[in-house]
Length: 157
Image (cartoon, rainbow, N blue to C red):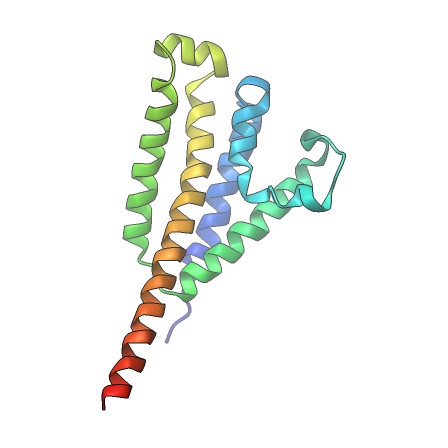
């Protein structure tokens, strides 16, 4: 059996690019950058009393660690790359559309958060998180169901 590396490398790279772009297009009061840095949120349980912009390197390291671990699980559990990327891409489009539709016009949305890139970068990261959580949950439930089914079949025999 070959070792898969796509998610172990791909997820951290995608996340880092989205977070790096988002800090340059952070949205209103760095709100969309905060959304983009969601995989590193656990860091603030450890590091208290600091402003997120003061610990950017730590945020990126924590996010890379988190997305790398999630990628490891997705590779280990043999998540189908095409399925994951399809759901992720639809999620990005849906999140950007939803965020922009919260304003009376596209112009007002851009005035609020600065640029379309701010919306896309935060949606890219948020969709990565949501798609990964749903994928791991789905695969985990499928594996538990398959295990329970095999145990029930062995009891019938």
